[in-house]
Length: 257
Length: 307
Image (cartoon, rainbow over all chains, first blue to last red; front, side, top):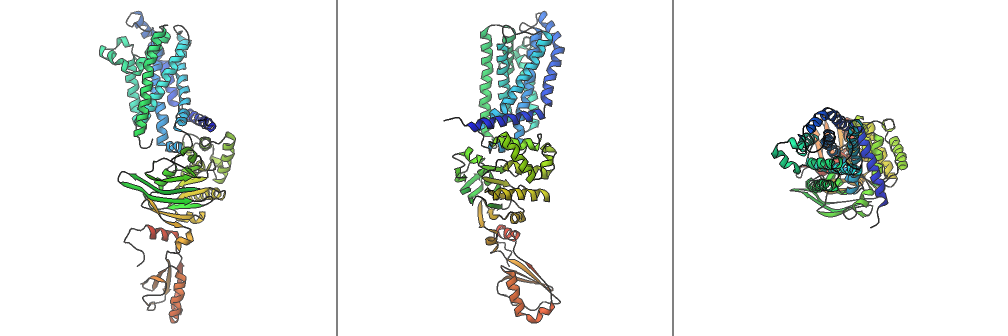
């Protein structure tokens, strides 16, 4: 089957449209970018001291603060992803998208691409701030760091989509998103270094995508071995697959999907 | 051209469409009327490809909605009953988004936006966020988004509900223009005078199917009009069966006659009571209206206006 040339125009129109929608409501994203920068600045000395005392055996204080805040606040930004889909329902525009010539895949790409870029920029600002101000550097080369940021952003995007198909209202999304973000951050060791968590929490840590995001960042920022990076990215990949399966499953159950 | 044949759709125990058939030719405006829950919106959603039919087929410009949904949708402009716009972006951006979604280039979108804005009296508000526009302006923007790509079939589901007269007139003019350009229009409404302005033929929907379909003249031919004769003092004694009259009611000095041709009926009555003509103070003729048709077709079974 030959590719449909008009699909490119439709996707371009959708990307442009979604970008405008995001630009018109930048508040949450600004908040989720400024807050981690502030928290990182405040928490870094404490985390450095803990690392110096040998209380943590993983990342140094700066790496822990930067990666932890990047992971935790991209989980909060997951709500922005979910809201992007949920708003289409509350505005009744979802049906109009579905009644257009665009394929479902085109609509998803059109909505996902601007969000992916925004979330990548969000990660880049947080990590970039730590590099510029606190001298954070990758363990070996830059590309693992870029790879981790892309993989984690993709995971957040997929999980946000799944959340949007599951919840029924913006209020539900807000509550569920906040709780999930904090819980995932705690389990992943993004808020507090994993070594300091109670044993039972550490045991269930791998069930959190945040855990694999932190391991990925650790591999990119501290460990230079490829195997640790591959293993951590594989963990993230599992959550991406799970998110896709859940999104498709939830969407099929919705009468308006 | 829009062709719907034998549409069936159930939602659990509710039979929303029950043998719904309708054909709309290019350049024709069909007013879809019926009570709430009659199946009008379900039909619109079936045409838009938003529901899976249990039986029957819809073809938009000759393309089967089920077999080639994207091609069918490309020929369709649909404005749902509820407001379905992006409130945080401007009217212009909404129009450009829906234009782009339907394959318009940037230049085409810009040109078409200007045309529609002029036609729908939106030029001055194009760069305001839709959420800050008045209800009437939002309704006009919504109608414009359905027309932006010059669809072959236009489906407007109560586009003027709650709208002010200016909005109503602007939307009706734009719809008429689309039809004049060859677009097949389905116009769902409860405001029957709008259909007269549009010169629309009429499809009356009840119980999930079209129960009457035809031009206004054809359909009104079977609907009785009214004549009121007001006398000074008591009306003359009338025969129980005046030729052509369906009912005759006397209330004080007033005689009300319902008849398919009330004028002819009055002429007959006056001729047979020539001595009382000098006591006649007023004659009011009310030819049948679409409202009368609507009431006659949609009244519950067993109830009749005709005594």
